[in-house]
Each structure stands twice: as structure tokens, then as C-alpha cells.
Length: 315
Image (cartoon, rainbow, N blue to C red; front, side, top):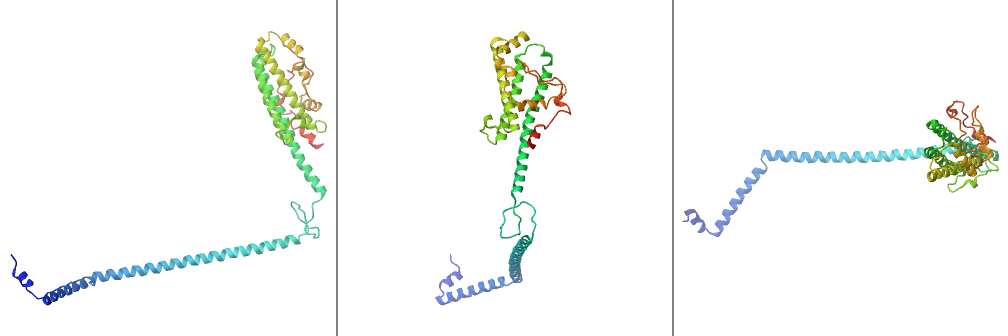
């Protein structure tokens, strides 16, 4: 059932209803303004405005600092470049006025006297020093190979000291072959170094004119022949069984003379090199077999001759 107020509203005129609506909107507007501009909201607006202003000031200051830093960096860089150019020009003028130049010579303008040109004698001395150093390095490496072989032979003799009175065995041959194979590989490396060519062979060595080449050639072929003889003796033992006596060993050498030490290839220079390395009580000899290494540790003696082959570089 409708109330009296609702009944009165329904019976009001259009003008009265519109006036009532405007009055209500006016009251709502007044409430909004009072709320908006109350003390709390005003303070809040002031604080927000201050924060925006403060941040804006700092952003401006930060931008200003960045621009200033970039500007100073550009100035410093330009100053450094300018200073470097001035120093370069100054050094160039100083060098051009110097009468005596030290250090590495270079080709100079013959119309000027600022630099002394290199002479043919100086070039010759420089090349001689270079080739001497290379020669010494080659000679020391070749001699090192020989010394290492002698050292290995010494330890080999110690290992089989109690067996030398008996015929050579398969185990002894295998040990000796290992020593010879290592020596042979090192002589091949020495050949490549000496000729500066990894594809070279022993025929590229100048054995007629060069002492060190002739020593290396003799070491190379002598080691190869020695190794080949050991291969053949090992093959004989594997096919026919071990030697029963030393006389059988001697007989084998007599039947295979090409495998005896006396027939291993060598050069006079290599023999001369070996004799210069022997101790006071040692002799190279001319044996059918190759067991001429002394059992004394001469290779370990402080008087053992070392760096003897490099003496040939002075000639």
C-alpha cells in the first residue's frame, strides 16, 4: 500500500519535480565540495604538489649533472688528443735533428744525413751471428741425442750385467731395440731441424762441406743399420729358438757379416765425434759385435765431454 508521501509525489506537477531534483543535486554538490576541500584533503593536495615539484627539481639537476659530465669528458679527450699530436710532432722533429741513431738500422733517404744507413759489413755480421746461433742449437741437439743413447746403454748394461757372459737373449734384444728405435726417431727430428724441412731426407745433408751435417748423417745411418741388425737377430731367435752358446752368436755374425758392427755405415766425422766423447780408458775398437760400450759410468762423470760438437760452428 502506498504512503501519503509517495502519493503526493505522484500528484506533483512537472515543475515541482524538476525543482526538487535540482535541490537534491545542489545538496550533493555542496557535500562533495566540503569533502574535497576539507583540511585533510587540502593537506594531501599540498604534499602531492610539493613532491612533484621536488622530484622535478632533482630530475632537472640530474640531467644538468649528466650534461656537464659529458661536456667535461669531451674536453678531456680533445685535450689528450691535442697533447698527443703535439708530442708526436715534437718527437719527430727531435729525431730528425739527431745525428747518430742507435738501435735497429733502416733504409734512409740518401738526400738527408739524419740516419746512418746500414752497411754491407753490418748485414754480414748480423747474418753470421744468426747462423751461428742456429748452428749451435743444431749441434747441441744432435749431441744430446748421442748422450741420451749412451746413458740408456749404460742402464741397459746394469740391468743385464749378470747375463753378459751368456748368449744374448730375446729379452735383451727387445730392450736394445727399444733404445735404438728411440734414438732413430730423434735423429729424424734432428734431420728435419737441421734442414728446416719436414719432408727432407739424409741425402739433403751436405756431408762433403759441413762437419755437423756429416756427423748427423753418420749417426743416422749407423743407428739405422744397428737397429736393422737387431731386428734380424730377433727374428732368427723367434724362428729357431735362443742361442745355446756365445759361439753360436759369433757364428751367426760370421754368416751375416752385413749385420756386424764393422759393416754398419758411418762417416769419418761421426767416428771423430765419438772418439772425442770417449773416456781415458775407452776405445772405439773395430768389433764384430757392438758391445764395446764401457761398463763404467763415464757418461755420468763430471769430466764427461759435453757441448763438443758446437765447436764446429766456429769454423
